[in-house]
Length: 479
Ligand code: NAP
Ligand code: MG
Image (cartoon, rainbow, N blue to C red; front, side):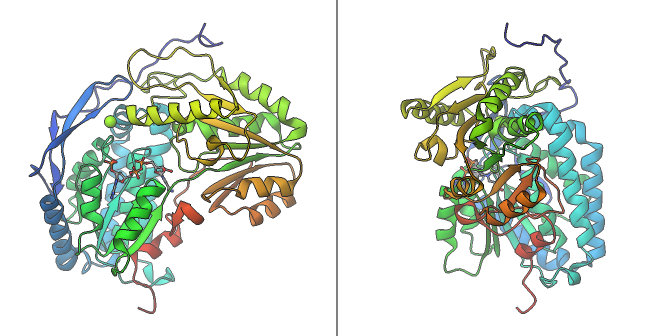
């Protein structure tokens, strides 16, 4: 028996989406053929090829940047904030209207469970456009000036394809910039559907340009001389390469990079809720989350009890078809990412940590990894230091709050952290001492467009979301 609860599958229909056999690039308001090669995007749950997608060449990127520059100079930067807001509100409403279609397509191309794409990704995407629509005519109150930068070059990863697009495009447009955005190679389809939504909203041509491709296309965007702003979300290694590439230019840069968050459970925490928070912290979106609670720090006196309850809970997680509404954990996004998760997990075992995986039958085709927890992890272990970016939790213990702080901060990253305790005063003192951009208390992985998000140290710089998210797209009050 694979799961202690038997249940009947309840698959969402994929009939609502119309996946074309091939896609071009979205430049100057039209879909155009690329001048380069094409690549395939697959459904990671089945390995089925979904479509062929154009790989933008340097010439294509140049055409997109020129279109964005024209739209910036002639239309978008001249339009009043209240007029720009109308387009953003319209886009937000169309996202809601087409929410089911977007959620199904996101789950097919990415592998994430439909209950997450439907109840988290897409609603938060719409909320982001509504939120920044509200700022478009109120920039004089932002504290960061009212003058846009020009053309923004934006490169995003595959873990939250449409959500990362929204985090990039909504504030850029609200501030009066135009954009050239590259989605990740393994998840281009919802960005291309978003391009159709821009057409449906009558967004002026060239304000949003979507160029698909791989790392070279991303490089062409960030190094293009006529790009004024680079916004990147992805791995720390690529982020460092981008920081080097733009050094010495006038480009404004924001980088949202990796993380290795500590989720800290004190002995006075409500343990059942904490276990739900641990599960949500690391198994949400297959652990493909930059702010995932991938290091559990549990107070020694309750460690055995927490581990017992956690394993019992993990055994009930339903792993499988992303389109099944019962599914808790979907497919790993790519064969490459699966190989990386396997490699680091094998290293964890070789380094002496004890591995336990939830008992579950994994489908024969596609990319899958059972929810896994490592105990007996030391701070020196690679599984405690490196981002695994998969459904793998490392458990460490502590005795005192100071030891918890010392272990939590002992990482090159600083994106997020969680604290579970009954004491409000302890929450505040922990939050002040944790070197992390976001600290959740008695909850985890909560996202809201009004709240700024971003990292310390190697997790990057700049903030996205909230009023602070406007800063990266405005010239500043004294310039
Ligand atoms: P990645 O390899 O760095 O890729 C991110 C994006 O950059 C992709 O579109 C990628 O294209 C492109 N790219 C690759 N090489 C490039 C180069 N030299 N110049 C310009 N662009 C380049 O990261 P990933 O593995 O897709 O994503 C996972 C990482 O993102 C994790 O480290 C995670 O923590 C981080 N992340 C951070 C946040 C945050 O807000 N801090 C949020 C989500 C994810 P391809 O698709 O073709 O590779
Ligand atoms: Mg795909």
